[in-house]
Image 1 (cartoon, rainbow over the protein chains, first blue to last red):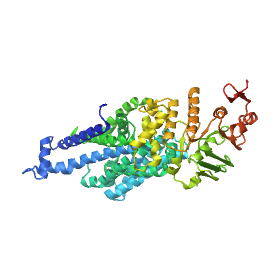
Image 2: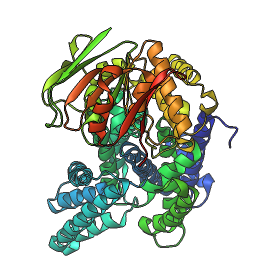
Image 3: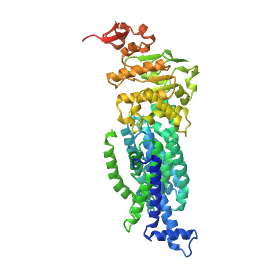
Image 4: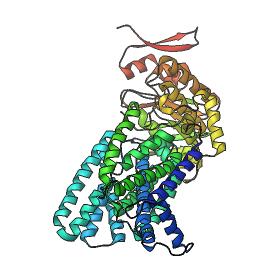
Length: 336
Length: 253
């Protein structure tokens, strides 16, 4: 792999992602035959006569939205993690640790209690996710301690508080309908993602990820710290503010369609840094693709491994925790 | 180029501070711990805003300038920090072009060329592709200075550039300061060693033990008496002809 240029590496992983998507498309409970999938796709576009209508429906209304959902959620959470780590110059943070995910879950739960639909859920998830990250980053300032550890502890405080808020809402929720919807968020799943969810988050994913990649070089400078960024003529508050809004919007969108899925926003950026280095101009595109691949593998396993659907957070925990331990071992000298 | 600064007071840390940095001039900022040396430097670097008074860059009030405009004239070498992430030395140095780029722009070939020239000038080309977190403290200081030069400023500010360095590296950094002044940069730096001002034969900006500000040539201000009361220890000044400078040393306990 060392001989390949960064561009080639990126291209290779993009091809791997597409292959994986096609593979994932052709396996499932109804049919495991790739030929059936190809026939269904061709049938959809009237290339062949007498298509298998059931397979066509499964491919286009169940598997395809779900695969895109997994790809988007994986990409968004991983990209968010990489950006948060960069601007807070802290390799220990992720959307979960900063409390963004919990905040977005609380927002989603509120919108469920208020009976709002998908758009309302997105807006509430965004507002509360943003509030959570602001709170988490304010605490170290108030305590006048800007160490990496303080940021993590602050995230634990905010996350802990928000999970109590979420518990209150579960307590208040109507058992039959609202409670099950809220519990669904905490488990994390992309199983019920349909076309309309994909349409709703596609523009957010596109716009935010393009803007963040364009800002990647500024994220490099912000990762040196406030003093260096300021003396290089960067308007730190404004730049960081824009980046936090974009990132939190993305995390909240992911959470609003899939619930909280842990680990991915923490380990994928680390994996990216090990493979391609810390330069965010290269790291961010890599992280997007790695995150998508990781999430797609996890979700494909979740729906095919057993006859029952395995909740995603179980699998991400099983895969994520040991992977993170290994990554920490590799980078142990850099952790202080 | 003529730059003038005039401060009056910063959180009552210091007041009635007024001096200017000219091209090709070295100013050594001295004073006891906690008296405001770094704060003064931060004010000039646009990192802190003086509570009273104004700072002028080439006749223009710094308050009316954007951070980018200031960064095109003044570059700052902070006390070395170790970033959380690994960047290649060249990628670190090239961030010097940020004051000249738009928000979505990235460095182009010309900016890499400027960065490489600065690296060559510091004679650290062998470090170019190394990772910034994996080089020594002395090397890191040189890389920081290379970035400050690549920023193409008129004034370079350095916060305790010799702190955390071994004796040889301290001297190397002082020599670099001298060379930079020779090639036309105005340089201001803070230090805890008055001997550095004697070595560089430069101007000094000094806070005495009471926080009173003095500015002028090192010869006029750094007298034996002044240094003794400022640091509260028994300091002796000697002119040594062999090395063509005066030194300050402490008498035996």
